[in-house]
Amino acid sequence: MFKRGDRVERIGNDYDGMFVGDFYIVAEDQQHFHAVLLEGKEYPYDGVKFKLAPPAMPKGTLGFHTIPAAAPTPAGRKDDSGKLDMTLLDDMPRALAAVVEVMQWAVTKKKPTPYDRGSWLGVHADRYRAAIQRHDRAACEQHSAVKQPPKKHVGPRFEQDDETKLLHLAHVACSAMMALENTLREMERNA
Image (cartoon, rainbow, N blue to C red; front, side, top):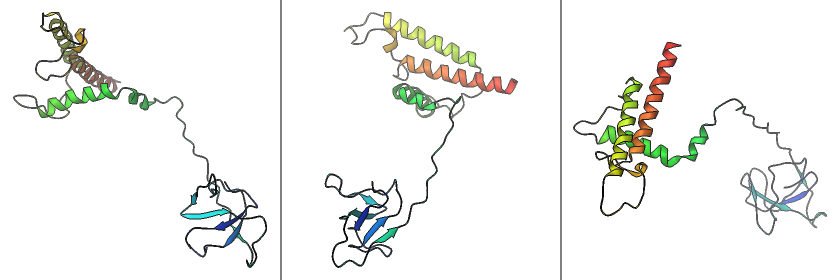
C-alpha cells in the first residue's frame, strides 16, 4: 500500500490525463492505493497501474504530480443484535433440500392430481401432526419387517415412503414445518 510522500511511476495504460512514465507523489495515506511491485507482482488501482519510483527524480523528468487524496469511506455498520441469524440454516442444506423435495413432489408428481402450491396453508396443524405420526409409524413398521438381504443402513430413520420414495423423516420434517407455520400464523391472527 502506498503512503504519504511515496513517489510512484505510472506503468499502466494512459488514462484521464495520466500517462505511462509520469511520476506522482502520494498526497495522503490511501488505503485503496496498492503498491505494484510487491513480490514481483503488479497490482492495479481502479484499472490504473503504478509502481514505487526511486527516491530521486530520474534525469529528464519535469517533476512529480500530486495524487489527490481519496475521499474517506465511511465504515460499514449493521446492528444485528437481538436478531435471528438466519444463516444458521446454511448449516443444514441437505435437510432443507429434503423438505423442499417433499414439497416439490407434492406439487409436481402427486397422483392423481398434484397439490396447488401453498394449498397446505390454512390446513389445521393437527392434520400435519397426524401425518407425522403416520410417517413415523410406517418407518418403524418397514424397519421391523423381515427383509432380505439385510439393509445397509440400520434404523427406521432410513426408511422411505412407498409413494414418494423419499425418506419418511423428510416427510416428518416437512409436516412439522407446515404445522409450525400454520400455528404461528394462527397465533398472529389471534393476537
